[in-house]
Image (cartoon, rainbow, N blue to C red):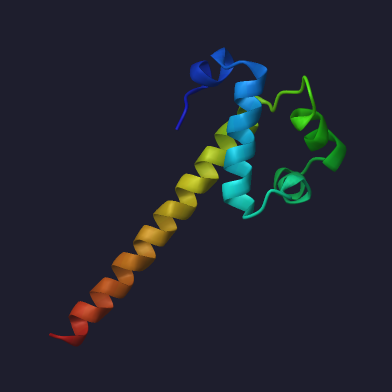
Length: 92
């Protein structure tokens, strides 16, 4: 995960590329703009501006995307541990 200073020092194209990669991972498609707007409670035109030529996603959007992906990874890990423990209990 990036800290705010790292995000602020990125160029606009770097911030756009990172946000796009994260949004695709989170939303499961390169058609993520409507989903992202709904998740963030903003308009689709606002999201379009962030990803247009010369646009830049706000730092908090990038931090949200990274945090949400980390949260989903943690949930997946906990579910795997739960199923593993269930399997071990079956052999007890």
